[in-house]
Length: 294
Image (tube, rainbow, N blue to C red):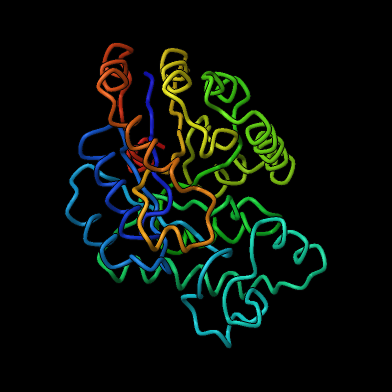
């Protein structure tokens, strides 16, 4: 059986992002989303999640953007002088290498993020990471412990399958240099946590069999998406995506994904894409199904 999880990252980032995810689920192929506990539109993200039957909701573990969910004095090693997160994965990786980040503080913060989502009435289907932070050295083990603690049955392993990355690369409108750089990032993530699936299996936490979407972040095309669907392997694949509508808050925020989010809404709701899913006999699922079948 060919199963596909289409996960929309960044629920709760802004109201426009929330609206785009709602559209891509209600009228498209999105089946799953992951919620930023510290997003400025968290409340409406929760309302959306609770009102949507058939939409799996995970926790988008974050160390890169915005304020912490835990008390600042408890997590100071992961904050800058302004009391917000330290920056992107490269910055975090450098601080981890220098042992400038206290791992118990990461666990404190991520536990607070998960508790905030659960206390809002959501039972998370899975854990994943904003900018794949859960894959950094020492952090995947923390995510697994928290999944066990909070009885969350699945986790994303950001190991992009090269054949699926190649399938998604079709389309003339992609920026080749950006896709290449993101492809290098995808390969780097494999090196950082090569045994992540084995660790998850040992911990009793389910994963998808395949994952894709890193190299094409912000560069998704109709041709690439159609190629992926035609060549989808047997088993369960997760396609990561970032649909949304551009609003003033998104324009002010520190994300390069702006107009590409609107483009992804159009692609994910495209009638031909939806028909192709049916023609290929693909079952659209969320991580809750993966956890149940494990």
